[in-house]
Length: 213
Image (cartoon, rainbow, N blue to C red; front, side):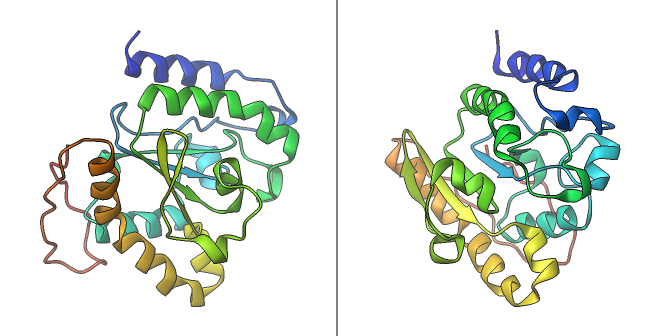
């Protein structure tokens, strides 16, 4: 079974999953979007209102800011896979509970194994905690480290900048380092470096498709 077929199968399983109570209030599950061969995988926390309505990750205000951040890093959504630690919306956008995280972890692990990304970028403390437990995100954000066979970069969730504007410079700074960090990870894994095109537009312009891979 190809990686694409595995991801499609997982999406079907997630759409009918009843492993935890979150399925009782969902409209649509949000398994994740992106190419099966993505070298960068973003993992957020959980779907919000708009994601629950549309079935796709990061389509609300935080998603628009994420698009801006990706553009700044010379990356587009077409280049990356985006998922969450829980696949259904927690009521009222509350934090996911331990039993909900546990119920969805099997799906997330299967997605990671299918995609086999060089870098995993965690967005927020719950996804960070899966790979780098018992640390504060304020102390380690933007710092790439090897976890098992992959490289993990913890970052603030884009929504944090919407609620705490003082965090925006830190988030912009972390994303600006992403191209170099990808090449650092690729070099360590014996892969050739990527020559990134220099951006001429500012971060408020629409993202431009790049032939990264």
